[in-house]
Image: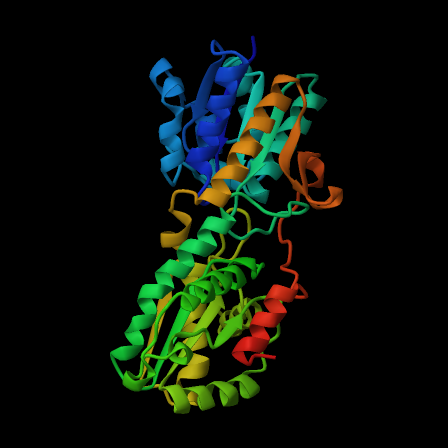
Length: 397
């Protein structure tokens, strides 16, 4: 009988708890006696040998996990191939190879199947670990699930949790937009997660505009769809002509007394980095080399570019990231999560390794993808009709 381990890693998304629940549910069906453990706080727990056994009570009450966001076993951002960072954080000792330490821990725990639930970094680390074990003549079945609100994993058509994050970001702004009544000439910047990929910002704007269609309006008392609408969508994949956009948005400000911008946190990142470096300052980065976007504050940078140009009396910057990513999965996501987790458990039980996802190389069908094909940084396809039509509708062409 195989022994199963699960770890969740990277930032949280509205799918982690539910994915664990789905795996438990399917393993209960395959063999209720299978032992399952969870490594605490992702790869950190694997390196430090910290895990928890999924008790009988946990396995019998798996359905509770479908109603929660976050991950009950915790997350962390650990790159097994970044030896220096692992030593600095005291996950391994000087002279130790994190991949070897992780491999030995899996052997010590008698793990036959490892499920990794995370984004591209999590699953590329799983691929590196599987390769390391294979080269050492050791067998381990590794089956990952693609989690990220950014929806930027190659070649996965739709990552787990992204739909829900867009829906929740829309609900967040549905409240925030009412701030446009607190002062005249107000600029609201809604900053949405998305380092290199604008899908979540675009998807959030789409979901928010769906909510607008259900609203009733009273233009005679200044409650109009035009004031509550999205006026600009800025994402990494589209170059921004600040002079042209300033002129367009100033007209909207003059007419409607407010401007609402949906901003991907990665939009304009190159310009911000250049500005920091030209000032002789160090750009803050994480263990994976990613720019720490919270530290460089893209929303403030964009506010600086637009506030004066639009003649804004007040500028409000609001981030929906933590609100959106912490939610429990919506119905559309939960259906995909269950299907993915069930398939992951079945394939792992058969000794097949890979990542279970909607494969763009196979007409978007749910299936097993070679871990060596997994990459991050997938760009959002701005040619999609729903997005181009939305830009036309808001006057941004």
